[in-house]
Length: 384
Length: 130
Image 1 (cartoon, helix red, strand yellow):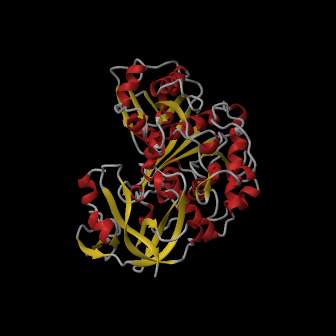
Image 2: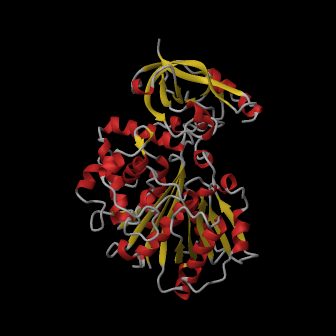
Image 3: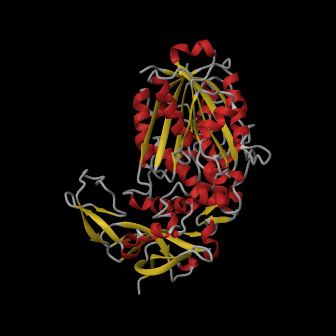
């Protein structure tokens, strides 16, 4: 196995891009990633996407994008793992380079949610869940997480306001991100008084619906300097799975997929949670963010709000969490989210994160979840 | 939903038929082909109990498109008497009255109508125990 580096990254602003299509979004992100490292010849394009077949009537995304980016006859295919598609594509791309089969791989994700009409987008996103034993009964993706959040609040006695504060933190971070979909600050009351979507989850507990694309370029670590002086090493990368329906889990209050993927990635990178300077975590809903902080080993169970009071998750604290604003404020173009996270950590570790920059960030982590924790992908990057 | 797709799940969704691992006794719902606890592929038929306790619930106010006419409705996780947890709708109770911890029982109910000419789908829901 060869060591692998990231040598370039690109992304679009997350937004409702009414004038721009799926391929145009990935075209921008992919071109930006490639031009940042001398526009090398690409041996493979591996892209994450969840909803194009539902919302844009398009399968075969690999061919579509390779064609649009003028890359034929490269190897090109899509990876789908619901909201975890971007992280899954990155794992596949890492494996492709580490194995020696490919040298330069462009990987990333793209999602075009606003091509959905009416309730189609909600329905398409819901397909991350178990079609026969969750969706059948009218469960939406939000409602599954609402079941977990109510149980969490009752079990640990964590007040509802604590979750609102997590959303406030994400928006404060995201207000500094030029690529964020919702780059503005909010107050605790904004969350508490926003529309009830699925009790107890309100609108401002939820990541917004938006379009976007992000991409990174991978190559063997030993070749990295040939492409760019600013590169990072992929120190650890792993995935794990759990039951597709949440009712089958022994413990509702942890995502075992994250715990296992993180453990594998930490061991591969030979680091512990306390070594992580900056992390992009998967806060689809505030409850998902809270559980992820615990599952990644950044705080004790049921204590995230106590840690927040001490500034543990701010730059300069224990670990800077979601300086991009996370899914809540940067946005959550589902199949692209994992790619955004990795691109953002790349920018942090190469000192190019602008107003979001975490000082002296050396080791960073990206955690990408699919479904209600039915799969997770954790990647650990180290400054080159 | 296609008729065969609906029809083939009737034993599970309308009769609560689960599977029990012949080697370690784990109850699996919905059934799997290999036991996640012990790796066995030998299962026997097992009927889930019809009573239990509501563990957690939510009121869906922004439903998937096929359920728009039913909104708001309650989705819950029910822990049955044997410890198996199952998801379904909670019925015969107003959203503002539902509470975690209430005893519930299974009842066969309509889940939805698939448009004007599609099939009418039935399954087990749970109501407050009478």
